[in-house]
Image 1: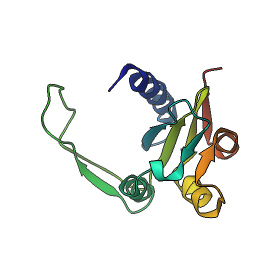
Image 2: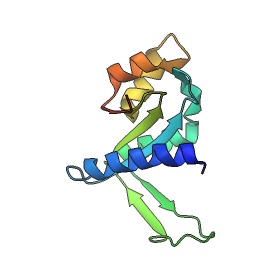
Image 3: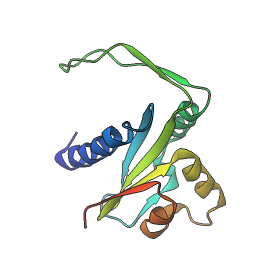
Image 4: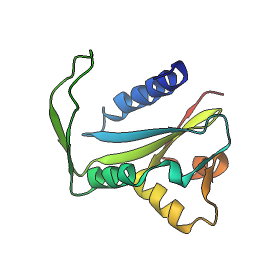
Length: 130
């Protein structure tokens, strides 16, 4: 993970820790616009969308891959009926968007991407770097 990605992950991780004070669990996929003011909906891959939707609904069980030098917390985890989000890093903020809202926006949008202005409108929360 490069320095830029590490910074955005730290901001989202801090948001998640605060979120977990009020909620049971949460799943987040982080995307980065690479300095642009929009992100193609296709940046969220089908398997990622499906996993976030599963966490939100019937559940997901995942085996954490072994290997590397990092100590892992455990081997497997499962989540069900939990909130899940796509976190999109725009140049000046990160928009935290509920996965159901993301899917609905992708289906109804005439655009093939999510602009920063629209992201703010549909976001559950915004981490501002202003």
